[in-house]
Amino acid sequence: MIPFARLLVRRIALLIALLATVFVVVDLLPGNTARAVLGRDATPDRIAAKERELGLDRPLPERFWNWISGVLTGDFGHTARGRSINDLLADKFPPTLLLGGLALTLTVVASSVLGIWWAARQHTAVRLLQPATTMAAAIPEFVVATLLILVFALAAGWLPAVTITGRSGFPASPDMLVLPVLALAIPQIGWNTRVVRAAMVDAAQAPHVESAVLDGISTRAVLLRHVVPFALPTIVASFATTVGMVLGGSLVVETIFNYPGLGAVLAGSVADRDVSLIASVVALSGAVIMGMLAVADGIRAWSLRGRG
Image 1 (cartoon, rainbow, N blue to C red):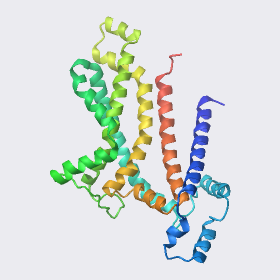
Image 2 (image 1 turned 90 degrees about the vertical axis):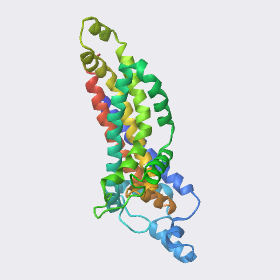
Image 3 (image 1 turned 120 degrees about the vertical axis):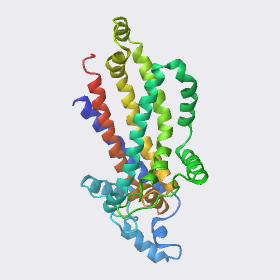
Image 4 (image 1 turned 135 degrees about the vertical axis):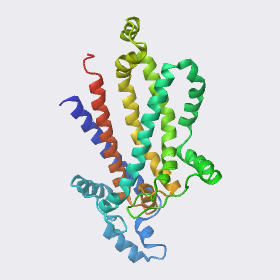
């Protein structure tokens, strides 16, 4: 089996193990799914009937097997309230992908520019970027979101603090995306800027780079032809990891800004102890992350070609 296929199988196995863990953890949470759906006034007979309807009276391994078997055929099943999970994900996942995609794009562009500039002009930029990136990377997304709302929405009044959903299911106006995207991107820009800078500095110390400088090649050509290709594997790996961080952070940021994505869906599913819906969100997010990791593996393999 080729290394890439072996790596893919390993990642799929890890994802399945994670989904099984989700089932176990949700089953251990206090509360009852049937009671959460029917309300506090539900009689014991109605609760028992609802449990049988949802399959909660069956052993946990059997419930997980039934769900994962459906997922393999493209059927995520139904929520505890009876709605198709496929339809729910089709409605709510695209806005989350839009938010995460914009935040990832901003992260890649900003951290690449800042990291390369920092590496090229270490003595002039280090005093500003070192504390700034450390602070940005250390602050959680929900704190950044709160600060952005206080400054740009409440104090300045420039941008809306709450997202209004249009008929398409997406935010009604583009300016409603600005603060959520910034809240997601700022911590990741701080971290990735430092990674890009470190990778560039390490690559610049390679012998072939010193030879290129001694040969009189321009700084720009040395940077683009000799430094960036050698720094690319580390940078791409960091950006690939950022995908998971952005998707995870988006669920929190969406709740703060009332954004029409998976954040509210996940919060409601936890309140209902709806393990099928929670696992479906995890599975879909995991599939996206695995896809981005595969792209990163391809870029890394391309950048490392001929070095062996």
